[in-house]
Image (spheres, one colour):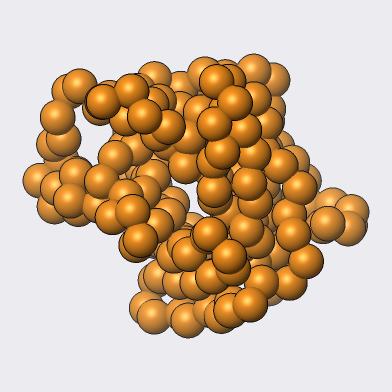
Length: 197
């Protein structure tokens, strides 16, 4: 039910460190969604971008974006919740491209989602190849050289790093649009009637 969403986070995702998320292009050539159990899966392909966004509901929510062509992705896990929470995808993933701090092109996606939870505590982000994302989900470990800390600026949370070889790497950016970032987490805000562009 729409009135039960006390918190919404704009999820902006790119494959490398960069100053900001670029503008979305017109409708992609392929885009669809599939809900399976507690997972919302959204797929998009357009030009240089092919991505799979997964939003996991329940007591252990997470966000994953995989880029199959590069066998890489980004993921953010949150601490276990006392009560199950439900994701809603407000705006389907749209391809974006930007330039990183070195002027290198970055391909990624941007989406808007909401989650019915009063607070989310950031647990762990993993920005790497798909194998390390799977390893973290299965056994809770990944190589320390790919670890990255959150950069928090107002209601924006950014995780970014170059690849280990120095090539353009990964970027995961969340901008909280209903609620606020506080003490290493996201606190819910009152639902609004604002439009989602």
